Image 1 (tube, rainbow, N blue to C red):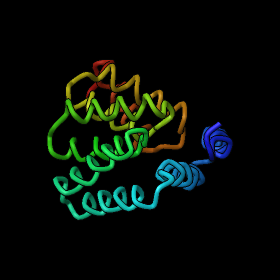
Image 2: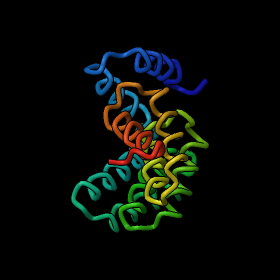
Image 3: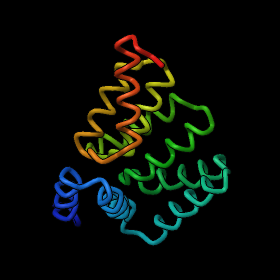
Length: 162
């Protein structure tokens, strides 16, 4: 069993049963575990890429995340964050590829699933997006933004778009 797996399993159980105000705290704990590569150098690349995203520099972020993918091809967060950079740069196909890779390595990655659903919506694949949003809610039922997106898509798909 990988290091932290029992902790992740416990956190996912807690997340599935959490009250709304506790869900965000548990989500942050889970992401904190996911972001630990086991290498200080890799963690620094991840931090630099995330800082570049926060600064609005998706090109620099892409460079950092691509270097991280090259050096740590088994680190799901490298792919997830690079997918975000690709998305911000309008490279939907590459973003989808990296989200698929993230989910192949970490099938419970609710943030990657959320990103996948957003892209499905952008591609006007609303039924697929709704299915993915519902999968996120099965893992993370307190995610208000995902619940709002799922509710909105249900209305649209029923022909009651606002």
